[in-house]
Image (cartoon, rainbow, N blue to C red; front, side, top):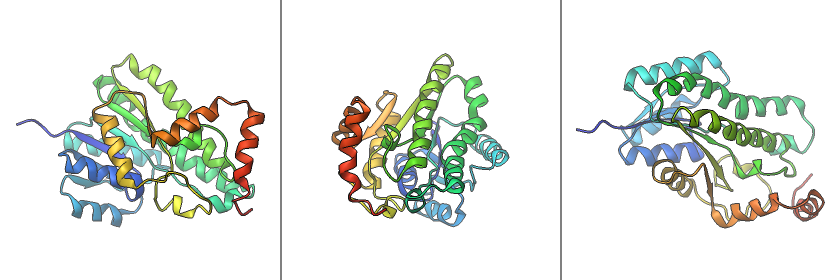
Length: 253
């Protein structure tokens, strides 16, 4: 009998992470899920017995190492790590709030670094598997009322590209997930129109296919929206600012 494959997902208590956990579990994977809210992880366990809670605050570097070790010891393997812990506070971003900027960077960027640090040596020695980082199309270019969030996601995107060079030599795949607008508790905070917004289940299906079937570096969706934003990346700053500024009128500063 073929052994079940194992995926570790952080940020799994809600939104995209939760939906991805359910998608992998129903496809027969062992799914180790981590987030701070243990009660929500336990609810996931009740949905599918292939899901195993490992509560974690990713800003705690030592706890990240402990959880990674516990998962490896329990299941003897990790095939994929999907690191997706993230936060956004659009209300605080409308003003310069240094404390909140630090918090967003600590969770979104350094939390992911702590997670990668916990399994870096394992994958380097194993010489197979996959490390996937959930970023966002918000990391493509700066957006209004999202300075810290955009910066954290841009940092993750650049880091994933750099990590890919390193891990290629170790036969470990690195992938980057760049979602557009997905209806989650995080995007529910936004007070502006979100074009082509999709469900967490749509995102989970795209991510599952991207991690298990397709082999491209970036998994981005919905394509009509993400390709438009990729086009905007090519524009000179003066033109980009003019186009985006039209949408700023819809944001209540």
